[in-house]
Image 1 (cartoon, rainbow, N blue to C red):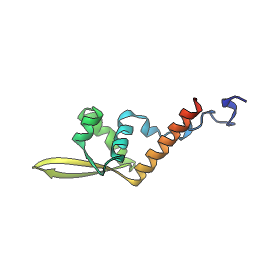
Image 2: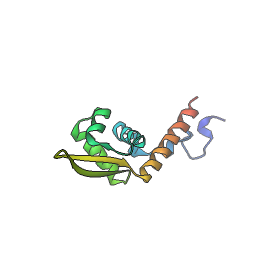
Image 3: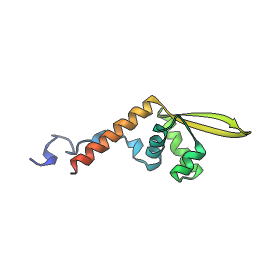
Image 4: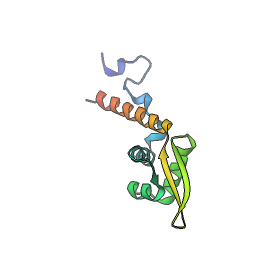
Length: 110
């Protein structure tokens, strides 16, 4: 039996159907991975770590915010507006689920 035959009606690749389409973008996946290892990070820090432009990172973070994966908190630091981003419980669950699906997919390719 071939791998394609293992799951009737499916694509035969374990994990492929469980990938989160929202996390298939480098910046969004990277932002969640970075936020998983911190209480919160500023927009500037995420921009530097992900090597993104203001506009692109802003758009990607907004998508994550819209689905509830991240929270944004705005405040002033030394009279400058600063936005802090943190991972929500929903975002943490989505990241874990996505990474588990990636792991499954990689194991099927061995």
